[in-house]
Length: 229
Image 1 (cartoon, helix red, strand yellow):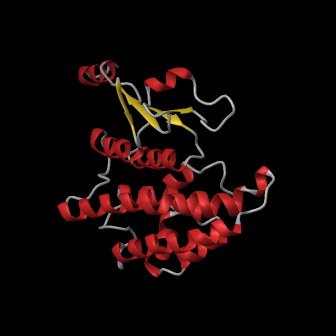
Image 2 (cartoon, one colour; image 1 turned 45 degrees about the vertical axis):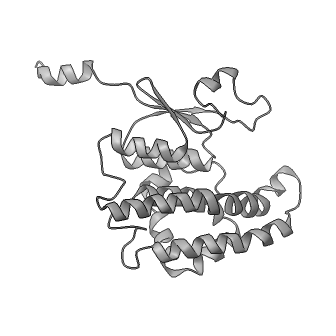
Image 3 (spheres, helix red, strand yellow; image 1 turned 120 degrees about the horizontal axis):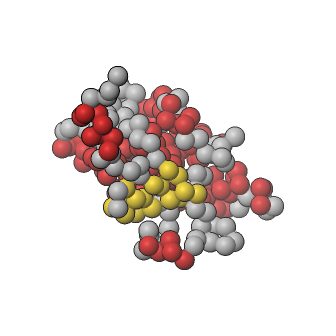
């Protein structure tokens, strides 16, 4: 039986799958992968470990002006910076919307992402997770002073997020999962592996409830980091 012409035309002119450059263990790469998973977008992950001895290939500058990860390419369109990539994914592909309809809720989601990037990520991941969970892997002891100094910084950021979190629903903002949920989940997946990080989340009932729901989403399992236990 012949296939309908419109199906053949759709296949003939289908755009190529997007390409994501980055390391599967990277927090920002995972945020992008979570967005792709939530939108059910097939993609190619090109593993790029900038921390490896050989570093990035010279031509990677073509993808990222500042030689960082992630970088993204879709049908000839190149993009970097995780929050820009996740917003593009939400708008460029079919599937459930990852930003609220309300202008105020969209602004709140953008605020959540900004808080994570500017005030939460470095102390939670680099000062708490890396020192408590990864230092021993590379053969050194944890820097307890660094951990202690990071705890109040993370506390302050989580307090702000706790106030914004919907006290009734399973999501941070509104009735559906948003980019705010995905960016925060990518960070807390590491942060809560350290007892200090897990306790900081547990102390905040809205975030604690949200995290228990969020960590069970299929997208979290699909994008599981190789550094998670």
